[in-house]
Amino acid sequence: MGKSIRTKIIFSVMLIVSALFLGSTIGGSRYFYRVLEDHTVLEEEQKQDQIARQIEYIQNNIISIAKQIAVDTEVQNCAEIQENENVVDKLVEASRMKEILRRYINEQSHILGVTILTKDGIDFSSNSTEDAAFFLEEEWYRNFKESKREKGFSDSHTYILEQGRGKAEVISYIMEFKDLYHTHDTLGEIMLHISCPYLQKYIQIDSVLLNGYAMFDSYGNAVAESDRVSISYDDVKNMEAGKHVLENKNTLLIHKNMQDGWILVSEVSQKLLAAQLQFVTIFFVSIFLAAVIMLTVMLSAVIRNITKPLEQLHEAAAEVGKGNLDVAVDIHTKDELAVLGDAFNTMIADIQKMLKETIEYEKTTKEMEINRLMLQINPHFIYNTLNSIVYMARIKGNDDIVRFSNAFISLLQDTLNVKKDNIFTSMEQELKNVKNYLLLQEYRYPKRFEVSYAIEEEILDAAIPNVLIQPIVENAVFHGLAAKMSKGHLDIQVRKKSVNIEIVIEDDGIGMSEDTVRKISEAEDPVKGEMRTVGVGNVIQRIRYIYGEEYKMQIESKPNVGTKVTIVIPYKKYDNKGEVK
Image (cartoon, rainbow, N blue to C red; front, side):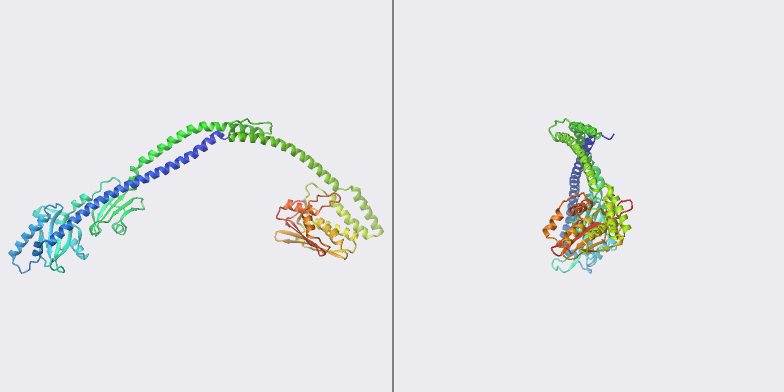
C-alpha cells in the first residue's frame, strides 16, 4: 500500500511551504547581500576617493610651488644670466639661487630637490651635488621631452641626494616658465623632485577585500601598487571613471580626477567579499530552518483534523469498489468535507437508482429487439412456396414469373439473414438488393420509368450500412416517378471522392416543395416491420449515429422538376466475415 493521505498532504504542504520559504529566504538573502555588497563597495569607493583627493592635493601643492618659483623675480633675473658672464659671477648667482630654491622646499619634506634649467643650458639647483647634465641624458627626461608637453610629471627615476646621503626614487614635476615681461619668451624649465615613498604612503589602501590596487601615471607606469589588478593599464585608460563589474565578477573602481592623467584603480574581490558577508547566508538559513520546524508542528495538527473525514470517505469508497452499495459516511465538520460527504451519500443513492433503471432498460431493449426481429422475419413457408412457383413457372416456360419470383426470393433471403450485430453489408450486396427491388417495381409499373447506373467497380467492396440506398430508391419510385404522367428516369451513381464515397439518387419525377423536404429531413420515422421497410428519416439518423455530424444526407428538390439525394460516407472496406476495416 502507498503512502496515506495524511502523509501525502503533510508532505505536499510542507514541500510547497518550504519552497515558498526557501524562495523568500533566497530572495531576502540575495537582497540583503546585494545591499551589503553595494554598501561595502561604496565604502571602498569612498576610501579610493579620499586617497585620490590626497594625491591630488599633493599634486596641486607641487604645481603651486612650481608656479611660485616661476614668477619669483630673483629666479627670473638669474635665468637671464648670459654666457659671457665671468665664472665668479656665475658661482655667486648659483649660490644665491640655491638659497632661494631651498627656501621654497624647506617645509616640504616630500620635495627632495628643485632644479632649474635655462634655455641657454645653465642649471641651478637646491642640491649642490646635483649634476644636471647627468639626468638630462636619462630615459625619463627623454620620454617627457618626446611627449612635447609644457608641464607634467615624469616617470619615476633615481635621484642623487645632497652631500652623499645616497639615492632616492623620485617623480619629477617639470614645467616650462616664461619671462614675466615678455610672455612669449621661454626662460627654461623648473623641475621639482618628489619622493616616491612619500606618495606611496598615501596611495596605500588598507582593505582585506581588495584583489589589488594601483596608481598609474600618464605613461602607464605604476607609481604604487599592491597585488596586480586583473586588467592592464591600456584597458583601464579606455574605461570611464566609476564602477565596473569584470568577467570574474570582481568590481573594478576607477578614479581619474587627478592631475596629469593619473589613474587610481582598485579591484574588489568577489570571493573575499562573499567570505566576509557569509554571515548573511547563515542568518537566513537559520531563519528558514526554524520556520520549517515551527510550521511542521503547527500544520500536523491541522492536517490531522482534515484527513480523518477523508479516511472515512476512503474506507466507504473501498467498500463500493467491492460492490457493496449499502454504505454511507457520517461527516459533520460543517465545511467542504461535510458537503463532500453528503455528495458521496447522494452519489451512492443515485448509483443504486441508475442501476435499477439500467436493468429495466436493458430488459425492455432486449424485448424490443426480439419484437423487431419477429416483425422483420416472415415465415419460411413463404420462401418454400415461392421456390415451388419458380419451379412450376420454368416448366410452363413463363420467364417473367421466374424473374419476378427470383428477385423477390433474393430480397426475402436478405431479409431472413438478420443478425444482431449485422449493421453493415457490402456495396455490391446493397446494389444487388436495389436492383432486385427495382425489377419488382418495373413489373408493378411497366414502362413507367427506366433506370441507369454509374457504379465505380473499385468501391464494390466498400462497407455500407444495411438498407441505406433502398429507402431512397423506394421514395423516388412511389412519390416521384409513379405519380408522373409521362415516363420517368431514375439515375443511380456511386463513386469514390478522395477518402469518401458519394452516392447520388436522382429522378425527374414530380418533385417536392421546400417545406416537404424540410419535414422529410427532420422526420424521425422508425424502422417499420414488413420486409424491413425503413423510412428516409431513419436513414438520416443512422448516418449521423454511425459516422457523426460531419456526414449527412442532402435532399434537393423542385416541384415538377425532380429530386436529387446525395449521401456522403467514409470509404471503408467490407471483408467476407462481415467486418469493417
